[in-house]
Length: 135
Image 1 (tube, helix red, strand yellow):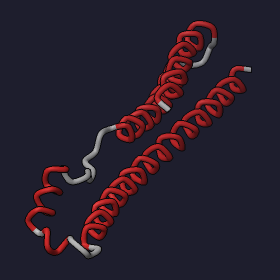
Image 2 (cartoon, one colour):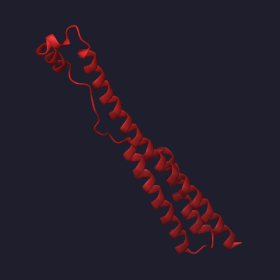
Image 3 (cartoon, rainbow, N blue to C red):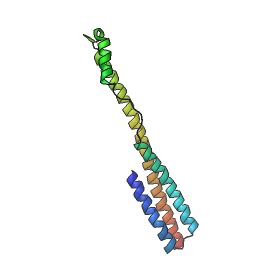
Image 4 (tube, rainbow, N blue to C red):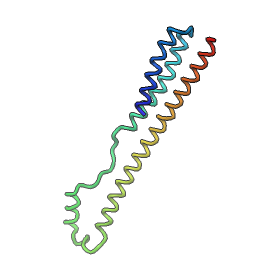
């Protein structure tokens, strides 16, 4: 995602001097086009970076703590399914935490992608409008 944003930004920033030098389009219109597209790209970039950030999530209990719990409650664990329930609870917490984190990242990436596509369409539309006004 970040590569696509970078490439599109580079294309836009290379296109602006060409538009200024080789067309008769008013500079104000070119700068307005640049401001609109780059602001959308900045929002898309921020969402993509946030999706890649490290967030707090549930981790497995330290093995020493597990041994301590088992040793303290040895009678409860022997001959019963309590140990399996402890493992199930631990895995469930980790799974729930990872799912929430992945869902958050997916939403941010979807927002970033939608804004990137929208900015590309806006750029094409504005360039077509500018092209038709100079002919």
